Structures are given as C-alpha cells and as structure tokens.
Image 1 (tube, rainbow, N blue to C red):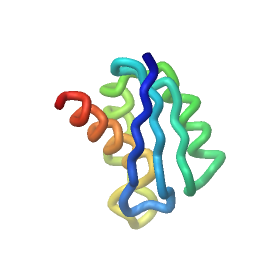
Image 2: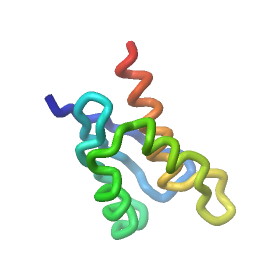
Image 3: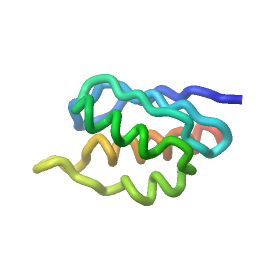
Image 4: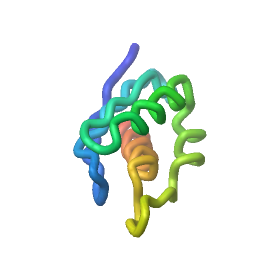
Length: 87
C-alpha cells in the first residue's frame, strides 16, 4: 500500500518534499520550490529506487557555497522517513 511522507527541507530553495513510497521503495517525489526541472528529473530517476541506494547516491552533495543541496535534503528526508517507519 502506497504511503506519503512530507518533509520540510533546511538550507535550500525548496520548501517541501513529498515522498510517495511502498515498503522501502520510492514510488514518486514531488518538490515544492527549488529548480523545478532538475528536481522533476531527480524524482524520475529515483522512482523504483530503494531508500538506502538513494541516500548513498545523494547524501553530501552541496549546492554552491551551501553545506547542503536539494539532493542532500532528499537524502535527509529519506533518513527521517526511515526513522518514522521504525517507530
């Protein structure tokens, strides 16, 4: 059964990330704000990917001078999702 997780990113232009998932697999990603085309592309690439693989690929990516980026914040959202599912 598909579920939805909402995350508020920190330190980036995007304002909200909505992850649709089933089990530990990403079914869809919608990002409000940020670089629309790039984030739609990332969402398309993540579809069908397991959380751990996505985290491994995205965590630590930086945007310019910032210590984070939208891809890094997607990884943080997935980690928060894993924590919420573990409870």
